Length: 422
Ligand SMILES: NC(=O)c1ccc[n+]([C@@H]2O[C@H](COP(=O)([O-])OP(=O)(O)OC[C@H]3O[C@@H](n4cnc5c(N)ncnc54)[C@H](O)[C@@H]3O)[C@@H](O)[C@H]2O)c1
Image (cartoon, rainbow, N blue to C red):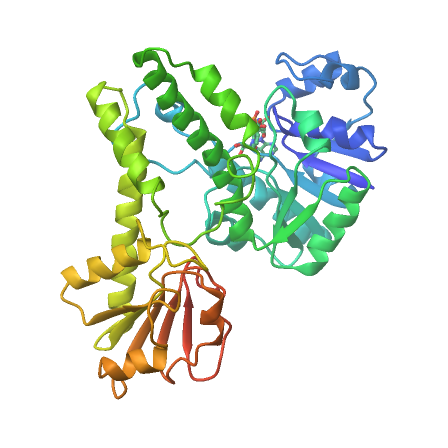
Protein backbone atom coordinates (compact mmCIF):
# COMPACT_ATOMS: atom_id res chain seq x y z
CA UNK A 1 0.00 0.00 0.00
CA UNK A 2 1.05 3.61 -0.43
CA UNK A 3 1.07 5.34 2.93
CA UNK A 4 1.58 9.04 3.58
CA UNK A 5 2.79 10.66 6.81
CA UNK A 6 2.02 14.33 7.35
CA UNK A 7 4.31 15.11 10.29
CA UNK A 8 7.57 13.25 10.75
CA UNK A 9 8.31 14.12 14.35
CA UNK A 10 9.15 11.87 17.29
CA UNK A 11 6.06 9.77 16.68
CA UNK A 12 5.59 10.12 12.92
CA UNK A 13 9.06 9.23 11.69
CA UNK A 14 9.60 6.04 13.74
CA UNK A 15 6.10 4.83 12.82
CA UNK A 16 6.69 5.65 9.15
CA UNK A 17 9.88 3.55 9.32
CA UNK A 18 7.97 0.70 10.97
CA UNK A 19 5.29 0.80 8.25
CA UNK A 20 7.97 0.81 5.57
CA UNK A 21 9.72 -2.16 7.22
CA UNK A 22 6.57 -4.19 6.51
CA UNK A 23 6.86 -3.64 2.77
CA UNK A 24 4.73 -0.53 2.18
CA UNK A 25 5.73 2.45 0.10
CA UNK A 26 5.94 5.50 2.39
CA UNK A 27 5.71 9.19 1.52
CA UNK A 28 6.53 11.90 4.05
CA UNK A 29 5.91 15.59 4.46
CA UNK A 30 6.76 17.96 7.30
CA UNK A 31 6.74 21.72 7.63
CA UNK A 32 9.99 21.55 9.61
CA UNK A 33 12.75 21.20 7.07
CA UNK A 34 15.36 20.09 9.70
CA UNK A 35 13.54 16.76 9.72
CA UNK A 36 14.53 16.23 6.08
CA UNK A 37 18.20 16.75 7.00
CA UNK A 38 17.87 14.03 9.65
CA UNK A 39 16.43 11.66 7.08
CA UNK A 40 19.05 12.64 4.49
CA UNK A 41 21.85 12.13 7.04
CA UNK A 42 20.15 8.89 8.10
CA UNK A 43 20.42 9.79 11.78
CA UNK A 44 17.97 11.24 14.28
CA UNK A 45 19.06 13.25 17.30
CA UNK A 46 16.81 11.46 19.82
CA UNK A 47 17.13 7.91 21.11
CA UNK A 48 14.63 5.57 19.49
CA UNK A 49 15.17 1.81 19.34
CA UNK A 50 15.59 0.43 15.77
CA UNK A 51 15.10 3.89 14.20
CA UNK A 52 18.69 4.52 13.17
CA UNK A 53 19.06 0.98 11.72
CA UNK A 54 15.88 1.47 9.67
CA UNK A 55 16.94 4.96 8.63
CA UNK A 56 20.11 3.53 7.10
CA UNK A 57 18.11 1.57 4.57
CA UNK A 58 14.99 3.71 4.22
CA UNK A 59 13.45 4.68 0.90
CA UNK A 60 10.90 7.05 2.42
CA UNK A 61 10.14 9.60 -0.24
CA UNK A 62 9.95 13.17 0.94
CA UNK A 63 7.44 14.99 -1.24
CA UNK A 64 5.30 18.13 -1.24
CA UNK A 65 1.92 17.80 0.42
CA UNK A 66 0.10 17.93 -2.89
CA UNK A 67 2.01 14.93 -4.18
CA UNK A 68 1.70 13.02 -0.90
CA UNK A 69 -2.07 13.48 -0.91
CA UNK A 70 -2.47 12.36 -4.49
CA UNK A 71 -0.14 9.34 -4.23
CA UNK A 72 -1.12 7.87 -0.85
CA UNK A 73 -3.92 5.36 -0.25
CA UNK A 74 -3.93 6.19 3.47
CA UNK A 75 -2.65 9.38 5.10
CA UNK A 76 -1.50 9.36 8.73
CA UNK A 77 -1.43 12.64 10.66
CA UNK A 78 0.88 12.62 13.72
CA UNK A 79 1.02 16.40 14.16
CA UNK A 80 1.85 17.87 17.55
CA UNK A 81 -0.87 19.02 19.98
CA UNK A 82 1.35 20.66 22.58
CA UNK A 83 0.47 21.77 26.06
CA UNK A 84 1.51 25.13 27.40
CA UNK A 85 5.10 24.77 28.66
CA UNK A 86 3.87 25.64 32.17
CA UNK A 87 2.06 22.27 32.29
CA UNK A 88 5.01 20.14 31.25
CA UNK A 89 5.44 18.84 34.78
CA UNK A 90 8.77 20.35 35.69
CA UNK A 91 7.26 22.95 38.02
CA UNK A 92 4.27 23.14 40.35
CA UNK A 93 1.10 23.14 38.27
CA UNK A 94 -0.44 26.57 37.73
CA UNK A 95 -3.78 27.31 39.41
CA UNK A 96 -5.74 27.12 36.16
CA UNK A 97 -6.11 24.04 33.92
CA UNK A 98 -5.80 24.07 30.15
CA UNK A 99 -6.62 22.04 27.06
CA UNK A 100 -3.95 21.13 24.49
CA UNK A 101 -3.13 23.52 21.64
CA UNK A 102 -4.79 22.30 18.44
CA UNK A 103 -3.53 25.04 16.11
CA UNK A 104 -0.95 22.83 14.33
CA UNK A 105 -3.35 19.94 13.95
CA UNK A 106 -6.24 22.01 12.61
CA UNK A 107 -3.94 23.79 10.15
CA UNK A 108 -2.60 20.46 8.92
CA UNK A 109 -6.08 18.99 8.43
CA UNK A 110 -7.20 22.12 6.58
CA UNK A 111 -4.21 21.80 4.23
CA UNK A 112 -4.86 18.11 3.55
CA UNK A 113 -8.58 18.70 2.94
CA UNK A 114 -7.79 21.50 0.52
CA UNK A 115 -5.50 19.23 -1.50
CA UNK A 116 -8.08 16.43 -1.51
CA UNK A 117 -10.74 18.82 -2.78
CA UNK A 118 -8.47 19.86 -5.63
CA UNK A 119 -8.04 16.28 -6.84
CA UNK A 120 -11.66 15.37 -5.98
CA UNK A 121 -10.67 12.01 -4.51
CA UNK A 122 -11.89 10.47 -1.27
CA UNK A 123 -8.97 9.36 0.92
CA UNK A 124 -8.61 8.00 4.41
CA UNK A 125 -7.00 10.48 6.76
CA UNK A 126 -6.03 8.95 10.08
CA UNK A 127 -5.27 11.31 12.95
CA UNK A 128 -2.90 9.97 15.59
CA UNK A 129 -2.35 13.13 17.68
CA UNK A 130 -3.53 13.13 21.29
CA UNK A 131 -6.67 15.24 21.83
CA UNK A 132 -9.30 15.63 24.54
CA UNK A 133 -12.69 13.89 23.98
CA UNK A 134 -14.95 15.91 21.68
CA UNK A 135 -12.11 17.72 19.89
CA UNK A 136 -12.21 15.86 16.59
CA UNK A 137 -15.94 16.47 16.13
CA UNK A 138 -15.89 20.07 17.34
CA UNK A 139 -12.61 21.36 15.97
CA UNK A 140 -11.44 19.03 13.21
CA UNK A 141 -14.45 17.64 11.31
CA UNK A 142 -15.80 21.13 10.47
CA UNK A 143 -12.53 21.77 8.59
CA UNK A 144 -12.92 18.72 6.36
CA UNK A 145 -14.95 18.07 3.22
CA UNK A 146 -16.51 14.97 1.66
CA UNK A 147 -13.11 13.87 0.33
CA UNK A 148 -11.50 13.73 3.82
CA UNK A 149 -12.49 10.43 5.41
CA UNK A 150 -11.41 10.84 9.00
CA UNK A 151 -10.41 8.06 11.38
CA UNK A 152 -8.97 8.64 14.85
CA UNK A 153 -6.24 6.20 15.80
CA UNK A 154 -4.17 7.22 18.82
CA UNK A 155 -1.18 5.03 19.64
CA UNK A 156 -0.15 3.56 22.96
CA UNK A 157 3.54 3.97 22.59
CA UNK A 158 6.35 5.13 24.83
CA UNK A 159 9.12 7.31 23.47
CA UNK A 160 12.27 5.27 22.97
CA UNK A 161 10.38 2.08 22.06
CA UNK A 162 7.92 3.57 19.55
CA UNK A 163 8.57 1.03 16.79
CA UNK A 164 8.14 -2.09 18.94
CA UNK A 165 5.19 -0.56 20.80
CA UNK A 166 3.51 0.24 17.50
CA UNK A 167 4.08 -3.16 15.89
CA UNK A 168 3.27 -5.15 19.05
CA UNK A 169 0.57 -2.93 20.52
CA UNK A 170 -1.91 -4.27 23.11
CA UNK A 171 -4.73 -2.92 20.96
CA UNK A 172 -5.14 -0.88 17.81
CA UNK A 173 -7.64 1.72 18.90
CA UNK A 174 -9.70 3.06 16.04
CA UNK A 175 -12.50 5.61 16.24
CA UNK A 176 -14.62 6.44 13.23
CA UNK A 177 -18.10 7.39 12.06
CA UNK A 178 -17.64 5.40 8.89
CA UNK A 179 -17.45 1.61 8.50
CA UNK A 180 -15.63 1.91 5.18
CA UNK A 181 -12.82 3.87 6.88
CA UNK A 182 -12.42 1.42 9.76
CA UNK A 183 -12.57 -1.61 7.45
CA UNK A 184 -9.87 -0.17 5.25
CA UNK A 185 -7.69 0.68 8.26
CA UNK A 186 -8.28 -2.81 9.69
CA UNK A 187 -7.11 -4.46 6.45
CA UNK A 188 -4.05 -2.24 6.43
CA UNK A 189 -3.19 -3.11 10.04
CA UNK A 190 -3.47 -6.83 9.25
CA UNK A 191 -0.36 -6.36 7.07
CA UNK A 192 1.55 -4.97 10.06
CA UNK A 193 0.52 -6.74 13.24
CA UNK A 194 -1.70 -9.32 14.94
CA UNK A 195 -2.80 -6.90 17.67
CA UNK A 196 -6.59 -6.78 18.21
CA UNK A 197 -8.34 -4.03 16.25
CA UNK A 198 -10.64 -2.15 18.64
CA UNK A 199 -13.29 -0.26 16.67
CA UNK A 200 -15.35 2.37 18.43
CA UNK A 201 -16.72 5.90 18.15
CA UNK A 202 -14.33 8.81 17.67
CA UNK A 203 -15.22 10.13 21.12
CA UNK A 204 -14.58 6.78 22.82
CA UNK A 205 -11.20 6.53 21.10
CA UNK A 206 -10.31 10.03 22.26
CA UNK A 207 -11.34 9.18 25.79
CA UNK A 208 -9.70 5.73 25.90
CA UNK A 209 -6.36 7.20 24.87
CA UNK A 210 -6.24 9.75 27.69
CA UNK A 211 -7.79 7.36 30.21
CA UNK A 212 -5.09 4.80 29.37
CA UNK A 213 -2.40 7.36 30.15
CA UNK A 214 -4.05 8.76 33.25
CA UNK A 215 -4.71 5.24 34.55
CA UNK A 216 -0.97 4.71 34.44
CA UNK A 217 -0.51 8.02 36.28
CA UNK A 218 -3.02 6.85 38.90
CA UNK A 219 -1.05 3.66 39.47
CA UNK A 220 2.20 5.62 39.77
CA UNK A 221 0.66 8.23 42.09
CA UNK A 222 -0.87 5.51 44.25
CA UNK A 223 2.29 3.46 44.57
CA UNK A 224 4.38 6.55 45.27
CA UNK A 225 2.10 7.44 48.15
CA UNK A 226 2.79 3.97 49.52
CA UNK A 227 6.52 4.51 48.88
CA UNK A 228 6.40 7.58 51.10
CA UNK A 229 4.35 5.77 53.69
CA UNK A 230 6.84 2.87 53.77
CA UNK A 231 9.62 5.37 54.24
CA UNK A 232 7.87 6.66 57.32
CA UNK A 233 6.77 3.27 58.74
CA UNK A 234 9.44 1.14 60.44
CA UNK A 235 10.03 -2.36 59.02
CA UNK A 236 8.11 -1.78 55.81
CA UNK A 237 9.51 -1.85 52.29
CA UNK A 238 7.88 -0.62 49.09
CA UNK A 239 9.60 -3.37 47.09
CA UNK A 240 8.09 -6.02 49.33
CA UNK A 241 4.65 -4.41 48.94
CA UNK A 242 4.90 -4.22 45.13
CA UNK A 243 6.32 -7.75 44.94
CA UNK A 244 3.19 -9.04 46.67
CA UNK A 245 0.84 -6.88 44.60
CA UNK A 246 2.52 -7.99 41.37
CA UNK A 247 1.76 -11.59 42.26
CA UNK A 248 -1.91 -10.75 42.81
CA UNK A 249 -2.82 -11.29 39.18
CA UNK A 250 -6.48 -12.06 39.83
CA UNK A 251 -7.84 -9.00 41.56
CA UNK A 252 -5.17 -6.36 41.15
CA UNK A 253 -3.44 -7.01 37.81
CA UNK A 254 -6.59 -7.96 35.89
CA UNK A 255 -9.81 -6.50 34.54
CA UNK A 256 -11.68 -7.26 37.76
CA UNK A 257 -12.96 -4.10 39.49
CA UNK A 258 -12.59 -2.33 36.16
CA UNK A 259 -16.27 -1.79 35.44
CA UNK A 260 -18.19 1.41 35.88
CA UNK A 261 -20.82 1.00 38.59
CA UNK A 262 -21.29 1.93 42.24
CA UNK A 263 -18.50 2.94 44.59
CA UNK A 264 -16.63 0.19 46.36
CA UNK A 265 -18.10 -1.46 49.43
CA UNK A 266 -17.87 -4.33 51.86
CA UNK A 267 -16.12 -4.73 55.15
CA UNK A 268 -12.69 -3.77 53.90
CA UNK A 269 -12.46 -1.27 51.08
CA UNK A 270 -14.04 1.96 52.32
CA UNK A 271 -12.76 1.30 55.84
CA UNK A 272 -9.20 0.55 54.78
CA UNK A 273 -9.06 3.77 52.83
CA UNK A 274 -10.30 5.71 55.80
CA UNK A 275 -7.76 4.07 58.09
CA UNK A 276 -4.94 4.67 55.61
CA UNK A 277 -6.04 8.26 55.22
CA UNK A 278 -5.74 8.61 59.01
CA UNK A 279 -2.28 7.03 58.95
CA UNK A 280 -1.13 9.28 56.09
CA UNK A 281 -2.28 12.31 58.09
CA UNK A 282 -0.57 11.06 61.25
CA UNK A 283 2.71 10.67 59.38
CA UNK A 284 2.33 13.90 57.47
CA UNK A 285 2.57 12.08 54.13
CA UNK A 286 2.93 14.86 51.54
CA UNK A 287 -0.14 13.91 49.49
CA UNK A 288 -2.95 11.92 51.05
CA UNK A 289 -4.09 9.82 48.09
CA UNK A 290 -6.41 7.79 50.34
CA UNK A 291 -8.29 10.95 51.25
CA UNK A 292 -8.66 11.64 47.52
CA UNK A 293 -9.97 8.10 46.89
CA UNK A 294 -12.46 8.44 49.76
CA UNK A 295 -13.59 11.82 48.54
CA UNK A 296 -14.11 10.43 45.04
CA UNK A 297 -16.41 7.76 46.50
CA UNK A 298 -18.30 10.38 48.46
CA UNK A 299 -18.64 12.90 45.63
CA UNK A 300 -19.68 10.14 43.22
CA UNK A 301 -22.40 9.11 45.68
CA UNK A 302 -23.60 12.73 45.87
CA UNK A 303 -23.67 12.92 42.08
CA UNK A 304 -25.76 9.73 41.91
CA UNK A 305 -28.14 11.27 44.46
CA UNK A 306 -28.43 14.34 42.19
CA UNK A 307 -29.19 12.04 39.26
CA UNK A 308 -31.99 10.44 41.33
CA UNK A 309 -33.43 13.89 42.06
CA UNK A 310 -33.22 14.87 38.39
CA UNK A 311 -35.07 11.78 37.17
CA UNK A 312 -37.54 11.29 40.03
CA UNK A 313 -38.96 14.83 40.19
CA UNK A 314 -42.08 14.16 42.30
CA UNK A 315 -41.92 10.36 42.05
CA UNK A 316 -40.94 8.17 44.99
CA UNK A 317 -37.52 6.54 44.67
CA UNK A 318 -36.91 2.85 45.20
CA UNK A 319 -33.30 1.75 45.43
CA UNK A 320 -33.02 -1.85 44.31
CA UNK A 321 -30.38 -3.68 46.30
CA UNK A 322 -28.95 -3.21 49.75
CA UNK A 323 -26.05 -5.64 49.64
CA UNK A 324 -22.62 -4.33 48.77
CA UNK A 325 -22.22 -6.77 45.88
CA UNK A 326 -24.47 -9.08 43.85
CA UNK A 327 -25.90 -12.38 45.09
CA UNK A 328 -25.08 -11.83 48.75
CA UNK A 329 -27.01 -10.46 51.71
CA UNK A 330 -24.02 -8.74 53.29
CA UNK A 331 -24.71 -5.03 53.57
CA UNK A 332 -21.53 -3.78 55.28
CA UNK A 333 -20.18 -0.63 53.63
CA UNK A 334 -22.88 -0.83 50.98
CA UNK A 335 -22.77 2.02 48.45
CA UNK A 336 -26.52 1.63 47.80
CA UNK A 337 -27.33 2.12 51.48
CA UNK A 338 -25.04 5.14 51.35
CA UNK A 339 -27.07 6.48 48.43
CA UNK A 340 -30.29 5.81 50.36
CA UNK A 341 -28.92 7.78 53.33
CA UNK A 342 -27.82 10.67 51.10
CA UNK A 343 -31.32 10.87 49.59
CA UNK A 344 -32.96 10.67 53.02
CA UNK A 345 -30.86 13.63 54.11
CA UNK A 346 -32.28 15.52 51.16
CA UNK A 347 -35.74 14.68 52.60
CA UNK A 348 -36.67 12.58 49.59
CA UNK A 349 -39.42 9.97 49.59
CA UNK A 350 -36.97 7.11 49.22
CA UNK A 351 -37.19 3.35 49.87
CA UNK A 352 -34.70 0.51 49.60
CA UNK A 353 -35.39 -3.15 48.91
CA UNK A 354 -33.21 -6.19 48.35
CA UNK A 355 -34.38 -9.71 47.39
CA UNK A 356 -31.46 -11.26 49.27
CA UNK A 357 -32.01 -9.27 52.45
CA UNK A 358 -35.74 -8.60 52.76
CA UNK A 359 -38.31 -11.28 53.42
CA UNK A 360 -40.95 -9.88 51.07
CA UNK A 361 -41.07 -9.58 47.31
CA UNK A 362 -41.06 -6.25 45.48
CA UNK A 363 -44.79 -6.21 44.77
CA UNK A 364 -45.63 -6.62 48.45
CA UNK A 365 -42.93 -4.12 49.38
CA UNK A 366 -44.64 -1.58 47.09
CA UNK A 367 -48.06 -2.41 48.61
CA UNK A 368 -46.89 -2.21 52.23
CA UNK A 369 -45.33 1.18 51.59
CA UNK A 370 -48.49 2.47 49.85
CA UNK A 371 -46.63 3.07 46.60
CA UNK A 372 -49.05 1.17 44.34
CA UNK A 373 -50.71 4.32 43.04
CA UNK A 374 -47.62 6.49 43.03
CA UNK A 375 -45.07 7.24 40.33
CA UNK A 376 -41.81 5.44 41.00
CA UNK A 377 -38.23 6.11 39.96
CA UNK A 378 -36.03 3.03 40.37
CA UNK A 379 -32.30 3.08 41.01
CA UNK A 380 -30.37 -0.19 40.67
CA UNK A 381 -27.85 -0.06 43.51
CA UNK A 382 -26.69 -3.69 43.42
CA UNK A 383 -26.26 -5.74 40.27
CA UNK A 384 -28.42 -8.69 41.39
CA UNK A 385 -29.42 -11.04 38.54
CA UNK A 386 -32.99 -11.06 39.87
CA UNK A 387 -33.47 -7.43 38.83
CA UNK A 388 -33.36 -8.49 35.19
CA UNK A 389 -36.87 -9.93 35.64
CA UNK A 390 -38.54 -7.02 37.43
CA UNK A 391 -41.72 -5.66 35.88
CA UNK A 392 -41.03 -1.99 36.31
CA UNK A 393 -44.14 0.20 36.49
CA UNK A 394 -45.05 1.66 33.09
CA UNK A 395 -43.95 5.26 32.70
CA UNK A 396 -41.17 4.98 35.26
CA UNK A 397 -37.52 5.93 35.02
CA UNK A 398 -34.92 3.27 35.91
CA UNK A 399 -31.40 4.44 36.64
CA UNK A 400 -28.89 1.69 35.99
CA UNK A 401 -25.22 2.35 36.82
CA UNK A 402 -24.33 -1.19 35.65
CA UNK A 403 -26.02 -0.87 32.23
CA UNK A 404 -27.41 -4.42 32.32
CA UNK A 405 -31.18 -3.89 32.58
CA UNK A 406 -32.72 -4.64 29.18
CA UNK A 407 -34.90 -2.09 27.40
CA UNK A 408 -38.64 -2.69 27.65
CA UNK A 409 -41.76 -0.93 26.45
CA UNK A 410 -43.09 1.97 28.47
CA UNK A 411 -40.04 2.20 30.75
CA UNK A 412 -37.23 4.74 30.41
CA UNK A 413 -33.91 3.12 31.28
CA UNK A 414 -31.12 5.56 32.02
CA UNK A 415 -27.77 3.87 31.55
CA UNK A 416 -25.38 5.73 33.79
CA UNK A 417 -21.97 5.95 32.12
CA UNK A 418 -23.33 6.10 28.57
CA UNK A 419 -22.87 9.52 26.99
CA UNK A 420 -25.62 11.04 24.90
CA UNK A 421 -25.54 9.75 21.29
CA UNK A 422 -24.86 12.60 18.89
N1 LIG B 1 6.01 11.11 20.79
C1 LIG B 1 5.30 10.23 21.43
O1 LIG B 1 5.82 9.34 22.09
C2 LIG B 1 3.79 10.23 21.36
C3 LIG B 1 3.07 9.14 21.87
C4 LIG B 1 1.69 9.09 21.77
C5 LIG B 1 1.05 10.19 21.22
N2 LIG B 1 1.75 11.25 20.76
C6 LIG B 1 1.01 12.36 20.16
O2 LIG B 1 1.32 12.43 18.78
C7 LIG B 1 1.35 13.79 18.35
C8 LIG B 1 2.69 14.08 17.74
O3 LIG B 1 3.68 13.96 18.74
P1 LIG B 1 5.23 14.05 18.44
O4 LIG B 1 5.91 13.73 19.71
O5 LIG B 1 5.58 13.27 17.22
O6 LIG B 1 5.37 15.62 18.12
P2 LIG B 1 6.56 16.31 17.34
O7 LIG B 1 6.46 17.77 17.65
O8 LIG B 1 7.83 15.61 17.59
O9 LIG B 1 6.17 16.08 15.82
C9 LIG B 1 5.13 16.68 15.13
C10 LIG B 1 5.61 16.99 13.73
O10 LIG B 1 4.53 17.46 12.95
C11 LIG B 1 5.04 18.50 12.12
N3 LIG B 1 3.94 19.35 11.64
C12 LIG B 1 3.22 20.27 12.32
N4 LIG B 1 2.30 20.83 11.51
C13 LIG B 1 2.43 20.24 10.30
C14 LIG B 1 1.78 20.37 9.06
N5 LIG B 1 0.77 21.25 8.87
N6 LIG B 1 2.18 19.62 8.03
C15 LIG B 1 3.20 18.74 8.16
N7 LIG B 1 3.87 18.55 9.33
C16 LIG B 1 3.48 19.29 10.38
C17 LIG B 1 6.01 19.25 13.01
O11 LIG B 1 6.89 20.03 12.26
C18 LIG B 1 6.69 18.09 13.71
O12 LIG B 1 7.84 17.63 13.06
C19 LIG B 1 1.00 14.62 19.58
O13 LIG B 1 -0.37 14.88 19.62
C20 LIG B 1 1.39 13.72 20.71
O14 LIG B 1 0.68 14.02 21.90
C21 LIG B 1 3.10 11.31 20.81
